[in-house]
Image 1 (cartoon, rainbow, N blue to C red):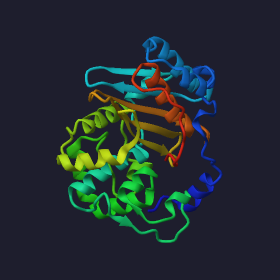
Image 2 (image 1 turned 135 degrees about the horizontal axis):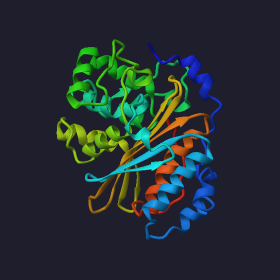
Image 3 (image 1 turned 30 degrees about the horizontal axis):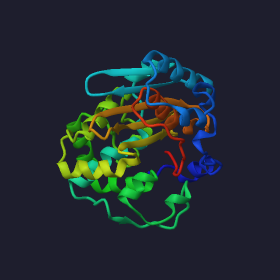
Length: 298
C-alpha cells in the first residue's frame, strides 16, 4: 500500500513552506528573529524554558512535549509532559532505522539513485530522481517504502525487535507500519535511540551508522552540528508531529532531543523545529540564528 497519494497530495498541496522566523514563537521568544539574533551565550534557567515551551504549545492551541537527553539526565518540557512516555507512530522519523537496516544488509547505498516513476507526488521535491541521502533530506516517503520492500517483512520485523525499537510490532504490511501503525514509540525511546546513534552505539556497523548520521546533518553553526529528522503521522487520529535528533558541540558533547506534539492544523508543522531550536538556544546549547525553512517536513 503506497500511502494514498491522491488524498495526501490534496491535503498538502496548499501548504506554503514558511520562513520559520515569521513569528509563530514570537510572543514567547520576544519578537521572533530579533530575539534570536540578540540572544547571548548566557543560558536561560531551565524552569523559565519549561514555561516558555509550554506557552509555545499553548499559543498554537495544541499539546506537546520536548524531551532532552545528555546521556545522563532526561528533561521534559511542554504543556503535556506525560506524552514523553506515551507511544505514537514514528512516521518519517522511522526513516533513520529504515536506512540503517537497508545499508547494513546491502539493500542500498547512500548514493544509489532511486528513479522517479513520473507519478504526481505530494511535494515537487519528490518528483525527481533522488539518492537515498537526498530522499532523507526531503523526507521522500516513496523512496523509503521501496527500501522497506527490498528489506522484506521478515528481516524488518527481526531487526526492529533486535534493536528494541518502540513496541517492536510492525504487523503484516512492510511499507506503511511506521505511518499508520502498529509500530509505535515514545519520545523518551526516540531520544535515547538517536543519542545512541550519535555515539555510534547502535547494533550496526560503525560505517553504517556514520553514513546515516551524515544523511541527518542539516546544519553546522560554526562547529555546532545539528542532526534531525521530522515526522508527521497524518494518517492517524489525532495526528502526531515529531522533530527528533541531536546537537553535537565542537568538543563532542551531544544533547539529543525529541519533540512530539499533536498536529491540529497545517501551520503546526513549522512549530516543531522552531520550538526545539528556541529551547536549545535558551538553554545555551545552540548558537542563535534565524531559521530558514528550505525543505518539506514530513
